[in-house]
Length: 352
Length: 169
Image (cartoon, rainbow over the protein chains, first blue to last red):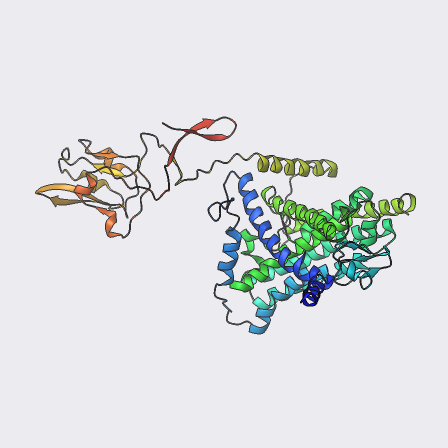
């Protein structure tokens, strides 16, 4: 009997399963995304002198989003005439998948040799860069780049989704996404290159274990990455792709029911995963803790980033597409270049 | 294709001042989020005492009415109609049509129609929206489906906030 319990415990806490499914993966991530959408509505209401969700549950209508999610999930799925039904149904799954998949490469903590619930996996998840085990679904020494490499496929599937729905609003949204994706990917990659140069590594775990948060070592890179994060996941003021007042909901216009949830969930999951990455690279991640408490610290830091980025909805209007592109190329690209210079200088003089 | 020229306002060309403006905007948002100036009334739980000249539902004073039918003639929405009620010509009103313009109240030569302060009502069917002279002769009263007591508030002008609610009675 105890053996079976031990086996179940071994399987549940096996990092590949634990990270992707339980924490901070699907279950914790899904609940947190619902909380973030509730927070978005509530905080926007407070700033705009309204009340927001109020009646569902005692505490500020916090169950409103759960109720909405169940309602939307049970609605009829309408497949328009003149689309390829197979493509139409699988298209919204891919953006969600590719928003979520990068989590596989992201270490969310380190495993000490003894004393942690994860210590049993010390040897199979050993990372020679930090000389410790890492809690990651797929431990790699190139996690800094691998996360971005997978996440970069996201806009392609947004375009596929718009193409599959055969709707003009969706196509306009997809073209805007194509324009923007070039702008934000350059910013994000340049800020990450600056960090990689400064820390002499491509391993997120090594960046965190150095003990210096990226925002202290290279504030310019952190700022550029944060703006890129907001752009990449279409939060205000760069909510140009889904622009409600212009394009209905952009690429998700034709979807209803469960497919609508999947189509809209992609950008929120993207924000969440990017925020975890940002918290690990620029906000010191789990340092100085290890094991599960460290992962919780990382999650809380990421939560603050997500909640701040959804809070921006109540502050900003929406940039036009040309304004967003001009700002990113003319104002933020020089900052990104400066961050690379700062990274070279910092890596040469300060961080060994 | 013609070139579309978009005119931009020349402000904040200096990127440092632009950054400062963004920080100021986010700071203002955080200030409002921490200390909200909510003006929405939580309506069924909290109800506003309306001013005495509020144009709410109309009531008839049957004994005063002389049956001149001016109200029915002036009504722009055809809500008011004359009926014979217990041997006397009296108006009846259809609230499904009424636009609450108050012309009937203004035109009445003997002040037999008055506006009340009631504006919140719900009906089961459209037939109930038609008030015959007997029903029209009473003050309309409908209890709201609220647990506990309804708090009454009054709106006062506040120089900082615009509108502020103070408890009434």
